[in-house]
Structures are given as C-alpha cells and as structure tokens.
Length: 293
Image (spheres, rainbow, N blue to C red):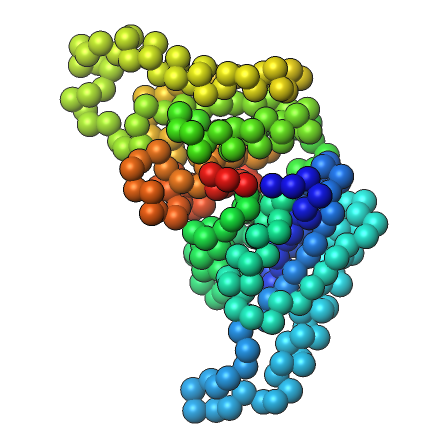
C-alpha cells in the first residue's frame, strides 16, 4: 500500500453507500489522502427477458450515475474535501470495484446496496468484492448521528498469531494513532466453539494455556509500541470464538480490523471464516485486510 494511493469509495445512491462516502471522506481528511468516488453501471445493456433494452438505456444510466457522484461529491465537501475525483464504471460492479482495489489505499463500500432484499445484512456486490479485493476493504453500516463529533471510540483488532496478520495489526495501530484512540487487541484460542468438555470448569490446566496464549499475543504486538508510542493498547485473550467477542466490542468501537485470511491451513480460501462472519455481525465499520496490502 502506497500513501499516495487514493481512498476509493463506491456508491449506488443507497443510504449505506452515502454513509460509506461520509466515512471515506472523513478518513481522507484524517490521513491527508486523495479521495476517489466511483459508481458502476453494473454491466452493459443486453436483453431483459424477451425484450430488448432501449438504446437510450446506457446514456440514461450514465446520467443517473453522474447524478449520484455529484451528490457524493457534495457529501465529501461537507467533510472538508476540496477536490474529489469521480468516475463512472461501465462494467459489472463487483469486477470493476475489484479492479479499483488494485490502486487503492483502501476500498470503502456500504454494507447493503439498493437490492430489494432488505433483510440481507451484506449486499451481493460487497460480499463478492470482499472475497477478491487486493487492498484493505472497509464495509460501512449506516452511520449513527453524531458519529463524527463524539470522542474517538477504540479501534479493535483481531490477532491470530499468524504472519500474514501483521499487516492488519500495522493498519490497526495506524488507525488508532490518527484518531487518538485506544487500541484493543483481541486474541482468541480457537476459531470454533469449544465443547463443554473443554471449558474452564472441567479441571483442565487452563492457567498454563492462558500464559501461553498471552505470550503469543505479546509476541504478535512486539515492536508496534515503539513504532506507535502514542497508542494505548489493551490486550485481551479470550477462550471463545473471535467472532462473538469482536462483534460485542464493535458496538462501542470506531473501527474493527481483521485479516481477511484465517490462520488455518486452507491457503486457497479467499475469505477467512472470522472476516466472513463479521461482515454480517459487526456493528461498526469493519476493515478486512489481505496479507500483502
């Protein structure tokens, strides 16, 4: 990731997308980074059932996308962004957004689009992009009033002890630093629910395991305190699935940061189980980070 790369945010005009634009604009101000807003036509016109799409469709779709971008630029201006780059993407939304991520400091999307399936927690485009994105991806729920004026809430980072998780830890420290916020580093013993036979009341040597897992968390965080001495860090080791605890902490967090690959051996898996589940349960902005950003 280059510091000169823009923060890129996609919009389809939905409330979640407008929240994403507001968040991305504030992030651009915090990091003194360029902001690029894009809107996709979601595929070239072909046919719909037995009816040919009118020849005017493409031009009308471009005009509609341009009006969305104009509204988004006004939202960015309210956050203090004087110059915004905008672009209409003419291909399929998920493919174009994945391509945009190749040149992004981070890609920001709303959790839900204009799909009629309102019960869906994550839109189909956002979910598809999350599985293939090459930059950090931030997924935004609809922001609550006053989110940008209240004292900065903690940044939460999931720490799994793997080598590729280091990129997520670095970004979490950077985000806590720029916000002047506390960093809560959460390390879970397991990615699965522990059966009753393995819980702490069964007479097993949990104290030894606690010591070992605390040491693993400390090792993962070693050196970051020197790089970010201004960041206060709270370490948390839990005997539980990480999703449950991270979701609980997200209710009072300004940002949750996780790697988008798990610590398991499935190297071909494009989205780890924890990051996938958090797309549906996280109550704050969620940043998923690929191993090399």
